[in-house]
Length: 316
Image (tube, rainbow, N blue to C red; front, side, top):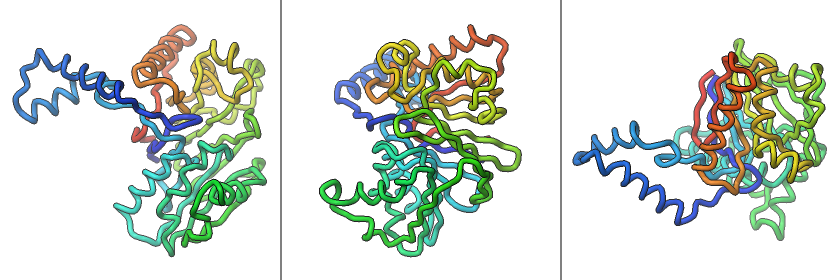
């Protein structure tokens, strides 16, 4: 099983400003001054080995879209703007007909806004299955492509598009994965998903607010995420933001992520739904702060922590 992140920002795509690009160039040149680079190979090696992540790369701009590889078909969690890049990748590397399975955490705009730009949905012969647990699943997708919101209705899409309502009380066998889902605390509700195959477990849990009830031993999430090889977790806010200014907004903190991951015996934690108002340097600091908290909270824990970024790949 391999997880590819196509979109990782929350609420709104991140806009890279001119001054941010200039600062990355300035920092790159400052780092390079003492190295006397003269050949292309030296420049490439310098970029790979000497520049900080937040300078040479970035955490990305797209809203949520995560691909799960390992089954016979394409499997996707959420249809944010990252779905456009995923669709372009498919068009460049694969020929139709193809089958796609898209699992929706919920129907807020940042999680569906990529679908009108998903080119494989316009290709006759392709099949697109869209799964969720909200009764408005189909109507939400239809309405975002109706006037006055969008000029191209879903009727223009030539693929066979099918909507499926999932029962959270059942295990679903889809594209060789055992799929389970659980209701989460978010305005209008959201659903977390677990995907199991060949002894590996991937848990996708975004747009979920964990309150004081998460301290209880029998908290539902502990069992749901237990022994996951990878947990993708909504950690949009710092703890102080979560409890003092953004309580009830439906998102969680990095510290809550660490505590629940440790208690669930998760192997790898990936912070997700990154705040759209902060830049790459701030997100890097956020990641370092989260790792320091793990050292304080559970110094002997084998848990590894990363922050999701567009095009990150994690092999399970």
